[in-house]
Length: 157
Image (cartoon, rainbow, N blue to C red; front, side, top):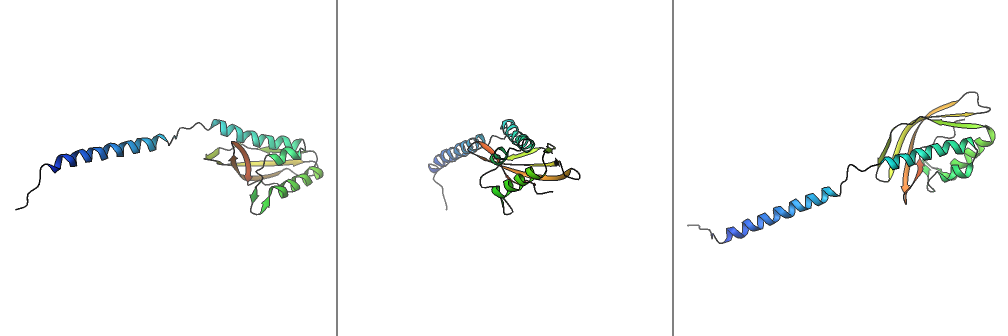
């Protein structure tokens, strides 16, 4: 006949209760680190400010301001920041005065990256008509600062 030792059961019950408490503690601690209600309004404001500064840089032909809005490692399908700035500098000379308008779509932020899909319009002296296009503009946050990192459409003319 098979018998069980009743002295072993209390230790199993205590052990099971201890495991349950540890499991609950792990779940609570892991969920407390997932703050899904983080206020991103400051990040959204910073990104919108960069887009607005881009319009200011274009309207004032300020190539250094324009350049500083981009991530130094900017690379969009092989187009580097230096190439992008060179094209805009050429546009500054050719279509002066030039303006840039943008329609503000919603900004999606995931950790240190962001994305906005919006309409852009370039106007310039010497252009037959305004140049309209849609941009999917990407941003990256480095050391607390946001930069454009891909998606700029500049060589439309």
